[in-house]
Length: 530
Image (tube, rainbow, N blue to C red; front, side, top):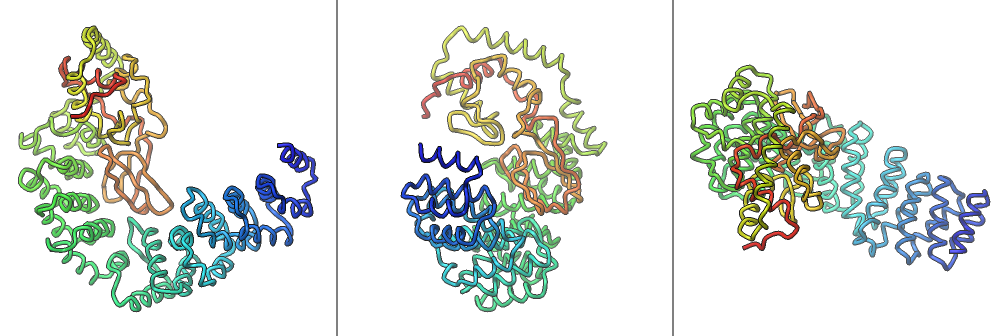
């Protein structure tokens, strides 16, 4: 500590010179070396001699903490000093399994990608570098994805150059996987001739076409081949699901009848994949097809009908068709989750609104009505709290929690992640719990803010933002299913002042059921699973 404190004092008083840095980088104390590397980074500049010593240290250093600091400092230095450090760190195969170092090295490299792409390409001119584990698994796909996401002519030209200098087809395949990751949720358009030729050369040398790549490129024969493949029950199921997802993102109109027919597939997974792909197509026939197949081809298992209802709720025309089914008693209103009802209220369609008001009543309860409801429920629960919850009551409560709450909330390591994990909450405070259930929108934590997305084709989705970048946005609904959208297709993206948890979840519970549910939620010792 004394030596470190002296170093800090010297740095604060302006005595940290390049000559001193060179001396301290040779210290036998790894903490002195680590802090010296950090202070060099804080300066954001250094001498040629110090930079050369940092590069040598990246090759020789035995302490992982010092190597970690070398990666962090490289991010703050100019390319001519940073990239030699990165090059040596990439060769340290022992760091492949480190929790942090591979990404620290990536961030150091990424910092140079925009300002000095020529130097970056020169770095990867070292053919031996490509086979080191950190390069192959962490760096190469991200590098291609980074340039493809940026999408300027210069960036796409860099993608072509990377494909050209890659040592083998296996390395080019890794680059292509990063390229496809950048184009998730959208079609590949407006590529420069150099990149188009590089991709064609890769496919020719491979001896076969990459079907997913060609679908995203909009090649008609690839789309036809994919449609034939997914329609064949004997085809590989994971590949069928992958092609269905891509077709849903690229949205060729002729895919609709094929996907509709797949609702009759023998596999539940294929039925789910078809529904999730169909949500992207603005075609009135889809709503009619789902409703007509709801009872015959969409069994009530593995959340399949819930997905079907959410697809129907996502567009006004389809929502109207669903509401007509409910109004005609062909689908029970009690089986339509309240968050789906809440989502359908967002459609600016008078017929939809009229049917919603007829079937579920008008808008949310007033604050006064909710206060009365909290008071009534509190009285009912307090009357039940005189007796200690037994195992049977906790088991019944767990079943109610699983049915009504676990889609979004985790309790005792079971449940979803759309809402807060309740395990560490103040669960013995009955007033806090009641207010949260009766008026979930009264207080919403920032990370659980619900968003509404409306696309140019009229698709309306609500949920939490999963991930987003300049090109795409992914929104996760109350059923934990995510939908990836092209930003160019998004017309409205706005935060909502209502919780993703709908009002009225416990309105139809009896007092006994309510007591069972709250007994489970408030217990500190969960029942033994049977």
